[in-house]
Amino acid sequence: MTSEQLKAWRADMGLTQQASADALGVTLATFQQWERGTSFATGKIVTIDRRTALACAALRAELAPEGGAE
Image (cartoon, rainbow, N blue to C red; front, side):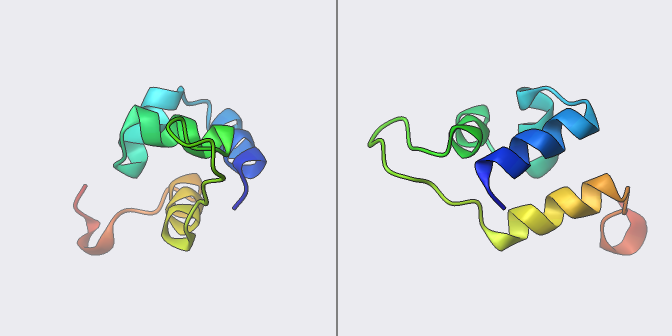
């Protein structure tokens, strides 16, 4: 998943950056770096891991966590 795809996912979901970060279980700063595509501290490219991409897909599909608990 690219930072542009993450931005599109958030827009499609109608979420704020904070709500997106909360849904994915990361800090707002982490989510903002993912959307930006670079680290605030170093300026280096950050990657969005496969688990995060899969979590975005699961949230889009409105899948419940394993066992049905939230």
